Image (cartoon, rainbow, N blue to C red; front, side, top):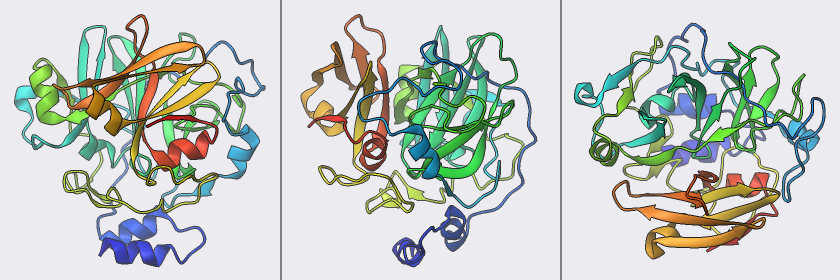
Length: 341
């Protein structure tokens, strides 16, 4: 059924997610009401109205703006979670052991964000350890990124624009309506054009692994204020590697393509200074540790057996700016990326 739907939408120049989701029979529900959440955060190296620091392989911001395409649902048609509720691990009865969760540990606060919830919302405007953080997930590109806040911009929550760039979530901030592609985290339209968001890495793991490693974790609840068929993924299933996640090309157009890996092969995308690096996640699993130089900074990708996932660290042991990403998306944004495979 899925293959037939993809074949059908591939015949149109700009197919929408709504077409695909309707074909799978699982779209619908009522959007949640808005509320206060995370602040937008900007790095200090980019002044207002100027392009973000030009990194090797970064696409021109105007070219990114020209690449915006409609994704189907309208603005906030995929409703962010603005007032997230959390459960203790012992109260969670809706997750199977092998289901993906996105884990975050920050200043003693331990959180798990289930993929089955975020696939319907894509943005959680949260507060973690007293600090505003927006947790974002794009199912089309397999990317999870947290964005931290800065004092002085209270109430600057993010919403879903209903549009995409390189098949990737295009967010907007509510105070200025500037638009931010999730992966680069740079405003490509609006008052905040050229500003870059500060990031917080999350780890992609299973509920069982996260629960056993962090029994004190809290878990994002399905009590979101929206009516969604949680537990039914409109794109397929990571557990059985079915549907969109299994294989094939992206549904939406991308700016650059490369065939060194299959399009949806997972890499660890790393950014440091003006250099971008893609490390084959399978290589990290096989070797345990993979070291690389990124713009004069030595980074170390390490396999975590307990969580069955990888993370990327700097020389001092702090987390680098990294994310799991489908290869097609990382390359589409960073065609000059280095590759470690």
